[in-house]
Length: 415
Image (cartoon, rainbow, N blue to C red):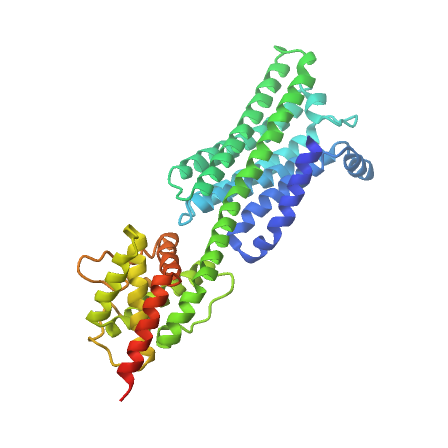
């Protein structure tokens, strides 16, 4: 089990390294996993013997393992405070001071601990072995338990306010992992006291070591899963936004060919999928509004009649009517016909600078017509409405209506 956990840890460190280089907010979590991975790697028997034998200091690898463990705990606290209380820097100096004090205490107590022989299982070998080594291990478990307890409280507290399901699940797993870490530290610390006071014999050493190691590995796996789940949610959202972008491209190209002035020319990075999708929807909305004055009352009435004859109901019927109105207005604009009415200005419209925050509008509103577009803060809901409009344009009823509308505008445009 330990080998499998170690492989997972190294995979996590390598996977998160690019994000840690790009985003400062990800570095604390990467340091957490890097330090934890090094700590677990130092448990490998061959590496322990190489370090201890090469330096001539028995169990120096154990001290280094605990140093990396405290580093991981301190980095985890910075990460959890950063995501749950990003605007607050209160307590950071205290957290750093506590980690530093624990490191100094470990180093001093390690020097005072008798280590005449190399111990592969330091806890099991030294349990009940004296005040110095018990104090050493108690400092380690006290810091670990405190750090994990604070992290558990913050993770589970943040879970109640998390929006996305993947984020909530991630915080739940992270909190469960750190809670398991608390249990690991408490059991080992309690057993050390029992061994030191003679209330427990050495016959239980191997069993306590085994089951607390199981708890430790479970804690690590839960934390790994919890840190991955939000990334999975982000990846799924990115794929969904990319799918919306591809699906809306034909509609966007059709509309902006008729009203190219609605296109915003500020460059966006390829990875800014949410902003790119938001902008595409804004440009589609603006194009619909720009074409609205070209829709005549006669075309509007005929579009409603086509929708009524289609046999569709509800949103499907409304999308078909909107598609007919859109095609009539678009062909009128392309044919050079003057607007049938004055352009409408949206309430509170402040021009291009405010367009990305503009409220949604109806596609081609008429009496009793519901708004045709969704809430811009919910891109998926609005995308569904626009996909329905794009699909309706391909229906035979709309194609026939479009052919009639194109012929009508050409006849009107002739002298």
